[in-house]
Length: 167
Image (tube, rainbow, N blue to C red; front, side):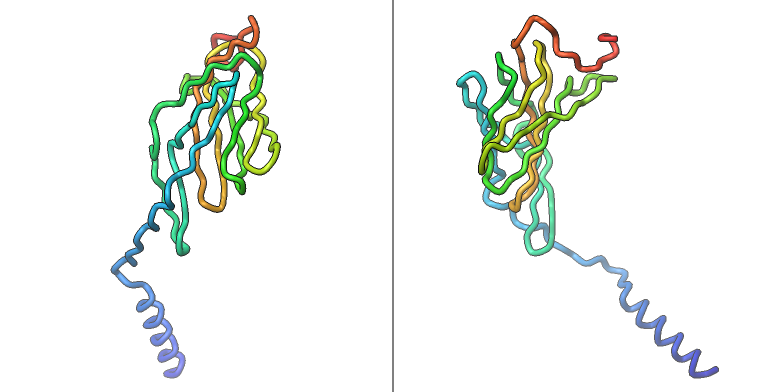
């Protein structure tokens, strides 16, 4: 019985010593050179879109910088139904579009096709109107997001964004 009590006491001592009252201090990793911007081409115009956040990892420690770039969506006028995108070669892009922060409206998945290393085509909805496109980029260097404010004029039909006043 005494041996069991000693074993329990030793086990508790080891357990308690592992639970230090002082938290480990971990420094966030240094910023990787610079968050990569997204290049968007529409109607022959080329626009550099800065990221609005960026998350990266170094030495097994990850961190994020919110509002890394501009807090405003980058505006672009579009008369067609696609955007040409270029980003880093090892990246993957996904996206959504919707009315931005309008209450009660839904966000829909954006179809993005990779055309080659660092090159993609994003298919926009047919119709005219204003909406926000959010692109998420993921790569070995880190993850980031971009907002693009689209003013589309591809037809006389308004883009349906599922807002309450459209029902």
